[in-house]
Amino acid sequence: MRVMQKSRAKAGGDDAPPAIALPPPAVALYSASVDFGAVKALNQIDLRIEDGEFITILGPSGCGKSTLLRLISDLVPPSAGAMSIFGDSTEAARLARQFAFVFQSAALLPWRTAVQNVRLPLEMGKKMAKKQGRALPVSAQSPEELLEFVGLKGRENAWPHELSGGMQQRVAIARALICKPKLLLMDEPFGALDEMTRDHLNLQLLDIWKKTGVTIVFVTHSIPEAVLLAQKVVMMKSQPGAIKKIIPIDLPAKRKLEMRDTAKFNKYAAQLRKLLGAH
Image (cartoon, rainbow, N blue to C red; front, side):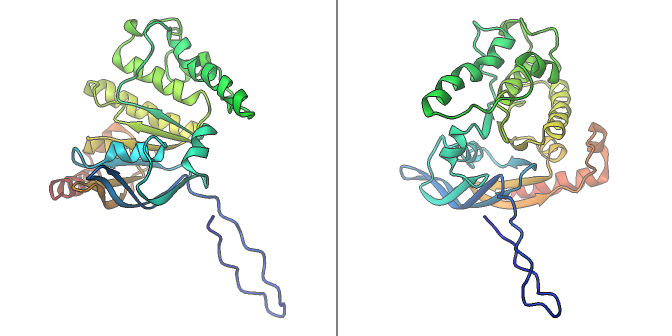
């Protein structure tokens, strides 16, 4: 944990005030690499994401964006380097349900209704928590309330095949939130949706982020989406996968679709497009 340096002692006194302990970052990677045999998927990744930030990850196909999320989520081990999630190991964070994952496919179980799909992590987690002798972190909201939270009130008992692609992704987001994660990892969750649905879900996701305070790391191939959502855009490069540049996005906190027509928004988009084309 990083600790601030002690301030200078007051005049006439020998004792300095106690140091102030800063909270650990949501995600910290230190020279982290991932090798798949002879292929180096990620090379020397240094990344710090603060608690409550919304970060988007952008880069060419094959640069390791999804691998980076899987590294953070303890799905693939680092070949070198170190990392932490809220000051803990990735394994400890996973076991404590500190984070949740939303994939490009909603991956709903077709034999379960929307509310039953949202409830699934609770059913699985209770058995695991009991076995490990720990409490399961549960949202103050019920599965029904979470479905209402993502705009699906009245669709609780719908089967997945009765829901549009956008509705299925909202069920997946509600399912991810049921165990009250502090970190939400999202791997192109809206990539397969039409533009209108994607725009709507982008705004809804921003609303969820503000209301819950969850840290979000969001992978996308869309430059406008990356700029609209993020406080910072992490641009990656390939061969091997590495961070090329981190771009802070200085736009108003209240994001609107109309921002995409502004000169400032287009300046960021042009900067990212240039970086993307120069990989």
